[in-house]
Amino acid sequence: MSSSSAQSVKIVENIQRIRQVIETCCAQYHRDSASVGLLAVSKTRPAEDIRAAFQAGQRSFGENYLQEALEKIQQLDELDIEWHFIGSIQSNKTREIAQHFSWVHSVDRLKIAQRLSSQRPESMPPLNICLQLNVSNESSKAGMSLETLEQIIDEVMELPALNIRGLMAIPAATDSFEQQRSSFAVMHNTLSKLQQSYPQLDTLSMGMSNDIEAAIAEGSTLLRIGSAIFGARNT
Ligand SMILES: *Cc1c(COP(=O)(O)O)cnc(C)c1O
View (cartoon, helix red, strand yellow):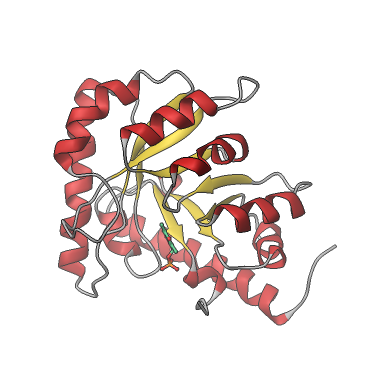
């Protein structure tokens, strides 16, 4: 049944608009728009909003808070949704994350990767993982340093139940296009370097509602868009 509330109509329009923005940016930066995925970040949104986005053809959704996500995963069980965990991860939450998600973007230390691998059910395909990098060098921001990444990457790549796909970052918010772009350039360069040893890495999870163009300019393959699809969050 299709929902026709004003909010649902808005969500469908927003998704169409974002797809248009992606097309325009890809043309400008000489990228194939098929190489830029769109993850709809649905944290704090009701299941109904996710349904509306699904009706517009959206299939991948990102959630930050485990309990909230598990409720929506259950409510939307009949829809063929690919769920991505993008929030900060406490050790005691890894089992349920490993059981209920297809992707985890926010792996910021070796111990979390090891737990996710050992707790991934054998009946499920390997869990897709991005390693979260701190590209703003702010002590308050989540993500590992470049030094830590270099120290742990070989060990992480060996974990049997994980499929390491690439890197994720949440740079410090700024309205400066040049600053946005320079943070994403660090990501781009780091992935290129890792690909010399691990050519299978194919993912740069970067770009949010406010920095889509800079992310596409620097090679994003997976935008994580919340408010530009669902409207401003009241937190
Ligand atoms: C909330 C969130 C987003 C989406 O942010 P918007 O600015 O609403 O597009 C993307 N990534 C992560 C990790 C988030 O927590």
